[in-house]
Length: 117
Image 1: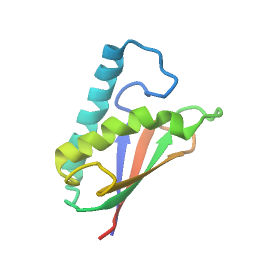
Image 2: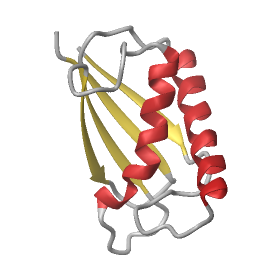
Image 3: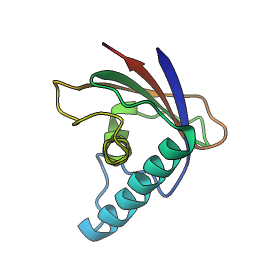
């Protein structure tokens, strides 16, 4: 089973090169985490035991980017899905994650969730 969840850009992007104060990063991460949980509830996502999530980052501009630099944005989104109850935990036993860059346009994160059991 495949399920797609789209989360509109909830706050600023977090990336591995970010040098903001840790409390600013925490605030932004909290916003992404809460948004992920809200969108998961609205979508009535299933509760799974093991899954692969492919996260695609769509930014407004089409300039070069390194998709893995956006892992700090994806982590709080995954945490929000765990808060919702999508999976028992986000450890390696329950979750595989791929991060990809998308096309320019409306800023958003698209998650393709694949049940692995």
